[in-house]
Length: 292
Image (cartoon, rainbow, N blue to C red; front, side, top):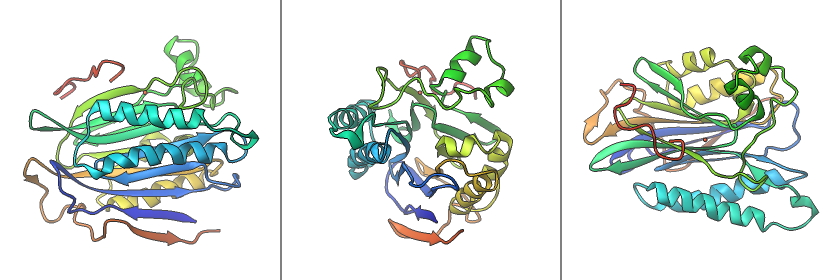
């Protein structure tokens, strides 16, 4: 079963967006421990981990805490940090054998305004990812907090070796599990037409970046692209839960997309459909205009 929701394209705020959220349990797992949030100004994927239903509980708690911020048009980095801390405290307070070792990754994109200018804030904790498509630019914004990423950073492992490494699924940071739960942040100027992808590793372990870029560059609307990406992961094996959130900037400070834009989508605030199917590293170091 693919679950999909579409945000309201008329949502008020400095950055107006359309977004989609698509998830699938995959072909192997019995339950879906991913949780998603796609409501301006917060777009999030949390990939739960732990025994029994511990991961499902941890990722759901994370969504609950960040959902409180969707009552306002814009957020601050401090508010994001507070929500993350609250979620971590609640996860750490879980008791009982079923919740043993509960934890979750967090990958998030939020809209924020500084001095009257719109920005994307990216937060990452674990190995769920955030990608950005902006004009000719396609990039992975987040950096995996994982054993294989650290080995590659040291030059001890090639990307090809990382794909088959026995510790490729082992994260070095997570919320509620392990000693390190400090996220990385990035601050990126937002542009009309930007597409931001937030996804669990159920997508990136099955689908190459080139295929992800090709899908994001499609003229189709974001909800169709989200479904296409999930289907690619399922066709490649679907060995994990796969979750995809896509957010596209429609208008920033009065700059609108032309009428033929894929952002002109119908929908209500939470229009849900079902399709049946058998870590700025610690200093906001990406300043406005960098890489432009």
